[in-house]
Length: 171
Image 1 (cartoon, rainbow, N blue to C red):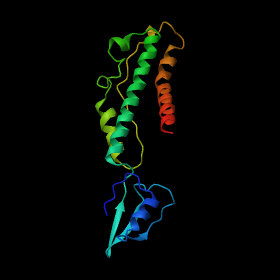
Image 2: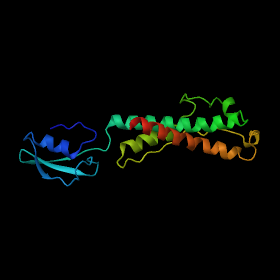
Image 3: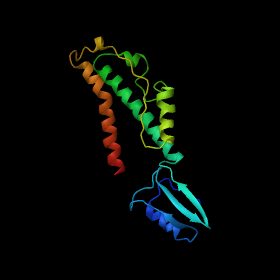
Image 4: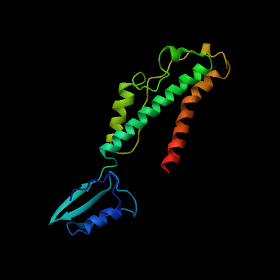
């Protein structure tokens, strides 16, 4: 009775139970809803009660989510620097921060440790950050009034574009 699925639906659970190895004691889950971390399916195996607690994510999913959060944060910061560079401030370019190479952008705690903690804990809440890209607002000569707002909006705009793009791909 080893269950290896990361997401286990009630129908899948009942199909496993049809093998006569298990008997349902209590299964209070809505139909077609994934079994989550805190929802416990109690089963009975050869006169012995067994409680299976299915995790929200398996380790492979946690690693994928950490990579997604890490690269999203890197693209976010690169876009801040790219916007500043296009508006006349070369500070990020001179600092070597206009690259998709993760090494100059990684913050050990915000890019690796904290996303790992969130990925392995229940709840499905994730966030992280990369090192901020430096810029000098006095060098934004191509847009002296709106330059700081454009640089500030470039990062969140890149997150929205990534979400829309990959949302359409997944769909």
